[in-house]
Amino acid sequence: MPKPKYIETPEKMWELFEAYRDWCKSNPRYQYSLSNKTGEATAIPLERPLVFEGFYNYCYDNVGCVDQYFENRDGRYSDYVAICSRIKRVIREDQITGGMAGQYNPSITQRLNNLTERVDTTTQGQAINDIKVTIIK
Image (cartoon, rainbow, N blue to C red):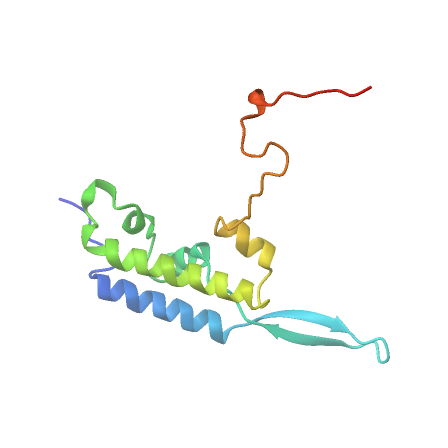
């Protein structure tokens, strides 16, 4: 007999994601700034970005492991495909818009979401083996 699912329905998965999102946005991280005049450290709240690993950990702490819902092993989680895709898109959108607004580190946001700009300035689109190099003396 198969093991029962931790999350009974896709709607419950979405509710779990909304709880994670609410938790993230209401629990900022802090950066501390040291005053040159007083020597006191001042806490500056920073909005916590949404990340897949954070959602997985939140789920694990609250209901159990959810990797299988996103991987759809053996087709057992086909009903969850749409909601899992939506969760991925919401997380990605939070990261991209936060990076574009300068709220999150743009460089890390680019790497996490495969948004690096690739410009070929040396080969002009040719394969490296096809380029003929002329040495002028």
